[in-house]
Image (tube, rainbow over all chains, first blue to last red; front, side, top):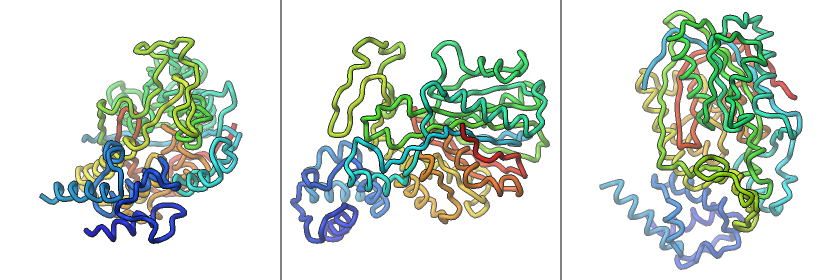
Length: 81
Length: 349
């Protein structure tokens, strides 16, 4: 799994975000488009694409998109081990 | 997992309040928020009970019309279950009041069960087991909620989701070839994922209970209102529901192709679609009533059956998988067959 693909999927799920807006160091919770509904949409997307479930704590602890990607990567590694 | 033989569903009716509310008109969210909400949850319209119309009233109307249509001898009804989280009173049990209102015999066992979104599946199980052990010919399962009365209208995380409905299902004794398979689960660790904090004995009602607090933008409520931790409920549903359905199918030697319809509790479109995709189910096998009836809590499965499958339930033999999941946390799956059952058109009060 690649960070670039993760960002593309992340952007596609966010309402009103132009492609290329999201960078690895984007603090996603500060985006205008971010809200509690988007959090659920993101959880569903990650569950569907990567087969892992983000918890409320994961979302709370992550600041950037890159942080999120790392959590998904490590959860996926545990699943595959 | 277990199987109950010799019990079948023979009648079903659902009643909803006449009053329709559109989420496009929800006053405590921006237009953009409302558009995203409707697209994501699939909930456009809801039915809201006026003050004084309770879940027991909705179930009563459904039961009266159903028993009349079935020409049912009330003296044969030996069990009445009322499953709700919005009873008429804390004391006495509403089921016992319903026994009298419906003119059922004093020998009829009448029980309230406090369950929400898993309540219909649990109700089928408890009713089936009681019919098998009491010798009663028929049982009346009443399942419904007026959730609109326990959410804060100013809470955009709950108010635009919930809708009101009541249902009545008649179960009866039949030949042992008819089987209902059940899988029932609970996890009390998640007791506070959906909760009304005050009003029970753990945290009694006080004047402070009704003081409104602003939790965040668009979320204002007091401690008598329902709180839902959306992420926890969402993750629980993603984790457990599809797995439970698969395990029960395996238990009774079936695959999803052997079932005509899979009827899920109508939580919200995002969640239900995620579960549907996990089970690789064709969309046409998974009916929804979310758009016009929202999340009707314990009544969402019967509401979907009546509004989406009435013609086929009335005219054909169907194999159904029913799946309820939510507050508790509690979840359950049932696999059963219906055969030209009495299914009334939606009743509006």
